[in-house]
Length: 122
Image 1 (spheres, rainbow, N blue to C red):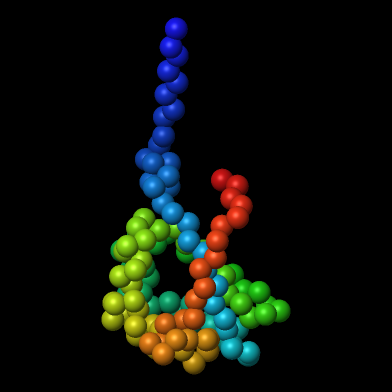
Image 2 (image 1 turned 30 degrees about the vertical axis):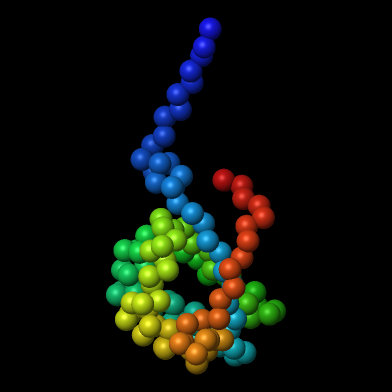
């Protein structure tokens, strides 16, 4: 006899099951912790909207105060949509605004290193 077990998923569970977690690290310049925090506390509404429209959810940035390393973690709907962010004028403007307080590339984007997930407890 064949037994079928159906598991009901709420709409939130369905959305979360399609999301991908992404993590990366960046680096602040010495003496810039408070300024970095202040700028993010005053995040531009147009940048917040852009990130949400791109499908970014639950975006957090953590600081290692000993090394001044920043660790970003976010959930995304689509890696392809995330790849489009660097082309957006608001993103470029934000990077230009932040380049004086953190390691940046020639295009003003933050020097960012992807991190590999090695453990997850849902």
